[in-house]
Image (cartoon, rainbow, N blue to C red; front, side, top):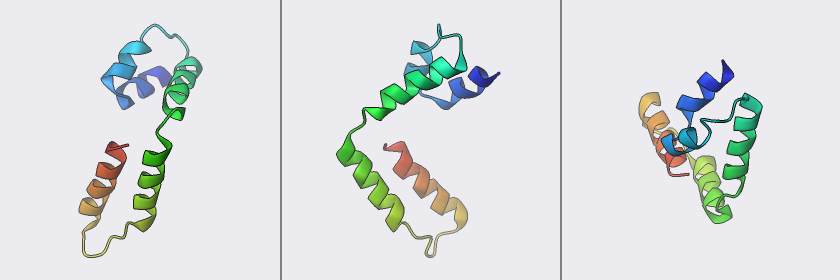
Length: 74
C-alpha cells in the first residue's frame, strides 16, 4: 500500500528505476540516497527563498503556487 503512495509522488524517471524494488523501505532509502547528493548551493538558494517568502497581497492560492514553483526548481 505504501508503495502505491510513493510511486505517483516521484518523477517518472525515479518511479521507473524503483519498479523492481519490492519493499517501501527500500524504495524510500533509494530515493533518500538519490536526493541526498544534491547541489548544496542550490539547496542554500532554495532555503533562502523559502525563508524570505511573504504572502503580501497574494491570495493563499497564488502564494502556494509560487511556493510550489520554488520547490519545483529544486
